[in-house]
Amino acid sequence: MRYDVDLVDLQEQHAAVVRGHVRTEEIPGFLGDAFGEVARVTAGQGLRPSGAPFGRYRLVGAGAMDVEAGFPVRGAVAAEGRVQPATLPGGRTARTLHVGEYSGVGAAYEAVQAWLVENGYVGAGEPWESYLDGPDAPQPRTEVFFPCHQMRPVHA
Image (tube, rainbow, N blue to C red; front, side, top):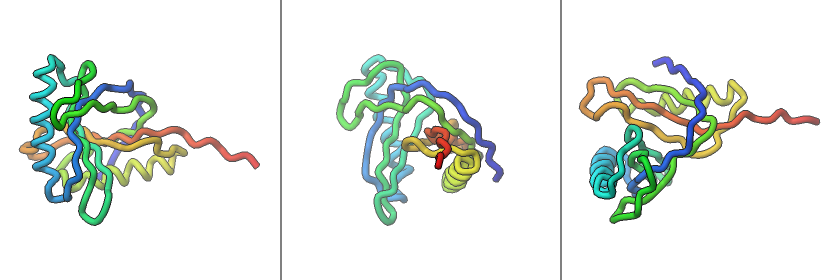
């Protein structure tokens, strides 16, 4: 798949998330549970999602990741149960779109990382992915976001 990468300037967003330490094969179940729990808690607090559900992943060992899953929301969420407040960062961000099975989204991350290097940018925070379609869509769309900034030239 060919990936087009563009730069966008995002506003920081409040978010409500569930965090967990998850084995790779458990991620789909974790996401479903987390999204449902966040939706219940935010609705109970009178908050509405302001964007698509998202996930942030940090590899922490063979077959395990720290996962943060939830929704951007209008307003700050109060911690309740496993649901915690978080933010999605603002600023310059490289973005691409993956269309197809979730198991292939790693190629989108690789494409953005290559684009950053080729265009003189460096990552400036943890990337995340937003799920534009439900898991039953035949060709789900996943946006991948990398906060970044332009590298400064080194002067001798």
